[in-house]
Length: 355
Ligand code: FES
Ligand SMILES: [Fe+2]
Image (cartoon, rainbow, N blue to C red; front, side, top):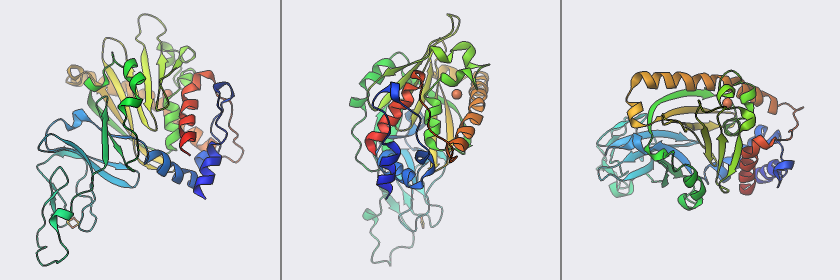
């Protein structure tokens, strides 16, 4: 029974941080737990599918692979944003890949042509079918919401609207103004570890003292970080600098998997860790480099920022791969969490509530 396995995996999440532990082996090893997470957490939540700045013009589209559901985010001719299934209503071919701008989405198999609002505009050679009804052959739309410059999709249609649940996060990030940042570049990385390990790695800076000893620890020491309570759907991790010569940065998450980072110095920069093609033990990580539009327009600066972000992520990869191997060991037992890992406990509480 998937449900009872999932319930058991999260049964021991503590109600107090002082008693919190890491997740048990089953939370990572049991396919039934992953199946329950897909239905009760991922499909039931708001998942980010695009930056609105990537869909600025009518005709802009971006294909995304959320779990088992190929989607396309679009801006139609009237300027409306949509998240649509991109599975052709004929025989199931994905009608588009990647991103770009188009007047219509034309399936490459038999050239059925869809508007960016999902309506079927034309289908050659279908006049003899008594079943064919152009009006009925629309690409199904997925429920959407918007916040902070992101377009979100909710696959099962049950999630409550985002904005009322994010007022504390919104207030904290008012100066950062995430909506004003644009994607300057994207780094694609196949990531062979469970999606929750990426969330956990992102949400604590305790490990600055380990993998980032020569980088982030020098500027924003792990033991000085602290977690801000912004309600049940989000969390914030504050990273004060070592001295006045370095800027603070802030890490934040909207559960289950919107992961964001913003510097708070003179250069307005950020990062969005997008997780797509999520399977039980792997996903594709797309690191979006977010920047003030003026900075994003300077290729040398973007290249330098890309190198910096990649260098830090390369320090995280051995940790994520190592923990993935470790938590699958029959001899792994979950250890106690530090107060510096309060955001992990908040994430676990979120998961527990949905299981
Ligand atoms: S599968 Fe798309 S047109 Fe045939
Ligand atoms: Fe890290």
